[in-house]
Image (cartoon, rainbow, N blue to C red):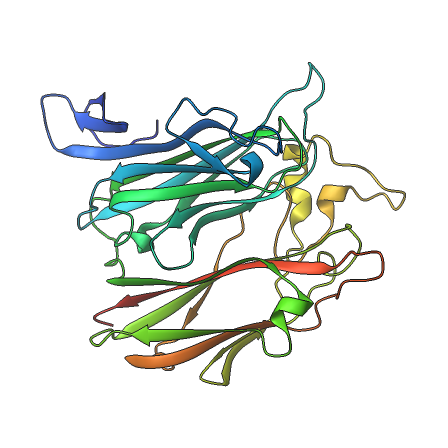
Length: 340
């Protein structure tokens, strides 16, 4: 376990699933780490959708989604929240694994009556283990109390992967900006296609509460295709975000630094042009890395009151005669502060 560095000697204790680091002698806690998932199997099996029904982790989507509810502490002022996600392939024998492919995945916070929030969005390596550490302090107002989490990997094999997720509440010793007072999930769409987007995209009605003085939109996006051929994985498309009909952002998600993750991709393949599969640039993601959110300050557009936020992706490859198509995995949420 990682703990905040201090000049004091730290002891550890475990209570109710929470790993706590505290100063010996009973001083206040420095780090509280909640284990959400630990070595949880993620796979696809139509005959056995729940690979381990004896524990407190449920499974959905034939084993591709793990679900668990945990109790989270309330983060006080000056607390940083770090999400740590570890994904490991399950070995097949001494030299191979069961699922050597790159797979889209995420860990999500599920709140009643609204879309899930992608806490960490990632793509597995080609058969390699990966670990991601992400600061999620901006979600402090919803990361408290009894909360349900979902862990997902888009695998079609069994066995396939295991997933870990911990949330560490760390004393930052000052210097942190105040976390948002308001969080509103507005979109989670794992398969945005030409058909589902239509001509205008997804329109979401949003009500900004009175007293909110600053609003920032978080947008998590990655482009894919069902056959690994060009669009929309290797040919990016315009993502367009509008508020009340006015376009506030138009951009093409793109990653051209994927070569630096080759070391975590043991089953990447070298092609005739000399490139490895893991090296190619892609629409907003790299095999073996997490997908950072795009953030937009929309304070000038999302004033208190009712608004319509629209998400569109232009020119998505439609379904062809071979039944293959391009699609995008997108999600979004808003955060707001009562003072700028």
